[in-house]
Amino acid sequence: MPVFTYACKDCGGKFDLLVGVTSEKAEFKCKKCGSKNIEKIIGSFSIGKAGGGSGSSGPSCPTGTCPF
Image 1 (spheres, one colour):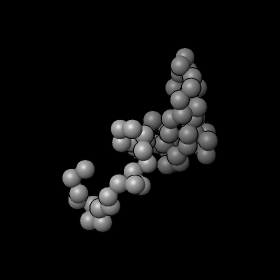
Image 2 (tube, one colour):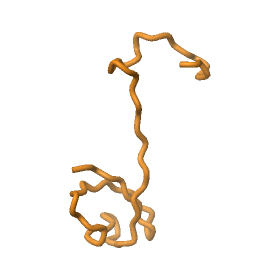
Image 3 (spheres, helix red, strand yellow):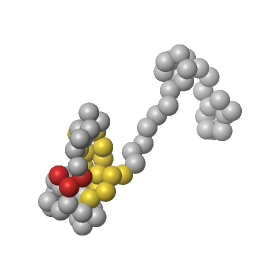
């Protein structure tokens, strides 16, 4: 089951929920204030390099503008 991050539109609280495939949004409520006025927010994620390496053995790029 995936974990999604939600934000409460009433109090601004953010929280994670473990969501089943058949779950309906109506079941969810803010853990801080109990409101059902919540929305799923897009979380950040990382895409690794091919080969599964951590990248620590590769060249460094102190400027952050390197082409790799």
